[in-house]
Image (cartoon, rainbow, N blue to C red; front, side, top):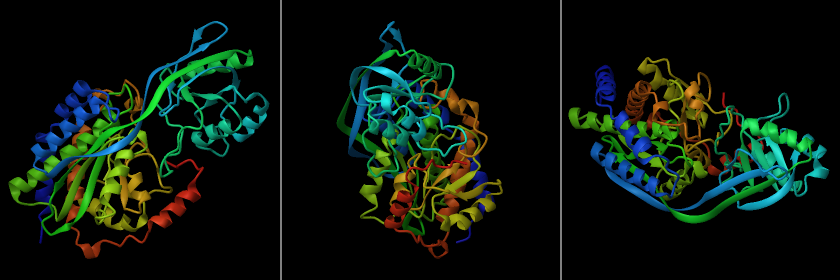
Length: 459
């Protein structure tokens, strides 16, 4: 089958621009529904909307695939200096257990083993103040490892100091999401602003005490991924997958993180379905489109999707993850494993956009591609902010300021056009031209174990 790629590219690019529903999706997800913490009513409103949009686009087998989610919520988090009742800026870390304690403040700098050893005599029962950033010029340790060291030293709780300025704070997690089932935080952990972090360090030198209260709970609830299919015309038993998470952290409308990726999934599906309906040209192998829940809670939605589908079913030739697309223009794709690099690069070269394919130096546990690669499935994310050119607006991450205006609509149209062109090309590569995946889940687990305790290189 010979396809006229020049004509198809013109059609796909034109439809991505002139038929765009990006602004309508942004208004619904960010303005009307708003923050979409998985298991909340707002997330379920988003799930219903996404299901309806996939059906309207003409996808087949559209469904909200429910699963039980171990989740967490909080009602109140406060810290005050006992001696003068001064309040301190505060947000709990994700899954922070409840606590109510009064304890001396101990400054542990960056929380390196050297600094924890120096403060060891003062740490039992204390509230440790630790920078989230890494100590310059030293071997970097993930903050999850540093928090575990503080717990082992007897600290009762930790206050992590945000790297952002202007009293801005974002939600963080206290565990390493490379673990198959991330453990509970090793101790109660909250984040404070950079400014109040500096204050707490001064108060520690003065021997002051902190009253820390977190009212939170863990529970099991329902959540769901939303999935649809565009059938293949040549090898319907095979498929590609395009996905991105629809949930947000608490209080964030999630414009960039991740209405941008969610909308790109919807729009790429719409454009390719419209091409098939109007011209008769469809994917050679099927393409699944999925929006995942609970990415912000340890990739639970993507993990549930992998567990549900890729024991009984053949895995995708490639699973592409979309996350935070309004941080800069698309530069290419980053694969988890190297054997597809040349194949993907040939498709990029045929598009003549200067896009590049690279391979991860480590198994990056930062988004929903991770459950796929952990299972030994070929997975990729888009090369954008992790490498260069991160737009200043993208710094409103896990914050109330991540609103719809943080999404660059023009640039997102370009993403949709490029994704549609790439996926259509990949769908028509004959099976014999796809290099076999030589990796097993056991080999991937061994690699993850070897990389434990390292900071993932992101550029």
